[in-house]
Image (cartoon, rainbow, N blue to C red; front, side, top):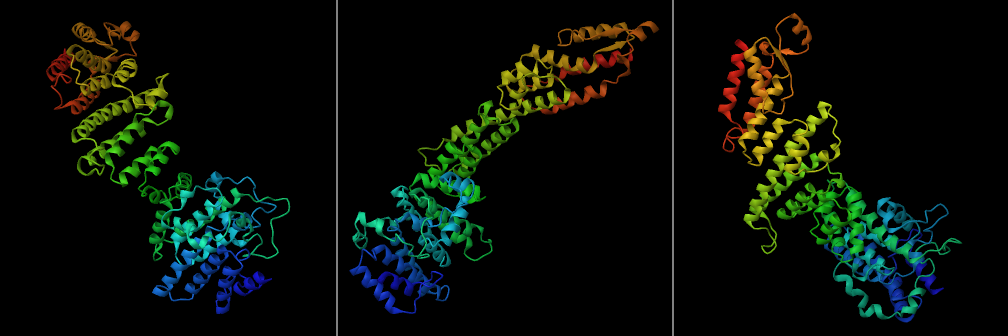
Length: 540
């Protein structure tokens, strides 16, 4: 009866504290000292927390007095949270209604956004945790919300080290040792902060995991509200950064993974990546397996050499990873940019950083990989547009081929002579015989098969195609109408229709190779002599 009298005096029907009576405060203090089994330290801290919170709400915003009262409310509600061990109350005594999903898990809390429904239910059912978070939000005490929720979560199975910072000592406070372990289940067994007649629905059991989930749900619900506030609202970004930083300072790896998933699923990727944490880096790599986000994370924090290595790793990942060639080329480009930035402003401690020489070697190596990858992309484009059947198309479109594989497995078998020449240039492979063979093949490919009216031209073309990869191509000598009819489908060499196409092809290759290497890959004198021979044949 005494406790009921106190509560009816202290709390109105909507759960707010009636601060009109000083006697209520004095009475609460007396009960806390003399009747701790009925009114434990948890009750007293809860009462004082709400008392200071509602006093603060009556003050002018931005006044020092309001700030002082708000901070006191946060301190007392943190202390109270250590004592909130009653599962039914913390989770909300109507946590599982008839239509509720009883398969709620920590994972689905975030992935299916069930934290919203759970937090709202806890507020409706008068959970002291949810009500405390609500009033602290009104006071912009976002760090206190994080602490209260994580302290409460600890009571129901979360790791003890999940309390973010200095408030971890409060459960060892002299004032909080006046209750024995066996007494904790007595605290607030009835619905002190809600409907005095309410209880858990018949046949529905509320367990510690429910209360743990509620603790996290309330935290993420109010964190979501802060993040969802329009960006132009005063202090919005300050409050969001403060709340996230406080939560991120927890050493509980299980909770941190949950928070990372929350920020990712609510489209707060930039805020997530701004967290300077090795735990986050490990989570992105090992659990999310998202090297793009990991690269962004390292880049944001000035860890450019590490960012470059991540992109190089992504570019080289196995074909089974289903990373396309385009994505690999993009990764290589990012790797070069990151290594280049690392030369000037990498903030990795000198003991762990790559040397300037290592970085320059990596930049050169990756640039060479990009050059080969671009040739591979051209090969893919040819295979796709030419209609040629390629049994290994998936491999060339979803991996980075070695230069030898690109040359031997694709460029040569599919007669991509331009690609063969460019590969030889890129590798500085300057075998004159092979190079001349490839150039002969390019010229013959533009001219052959064909027919001619001139015996000298026939002999010249036979000599030209000898030693090329097109020796089997037809060069027909047309002497009469019968021959003309037999070879009607062949183009006439003397018409010169092939000249403009060959000119463009040679000019294009020349521009790519011009002023590079020793010039052996583009044997200009040999090409000119050969072309002069073909031109002379036209006019014979």
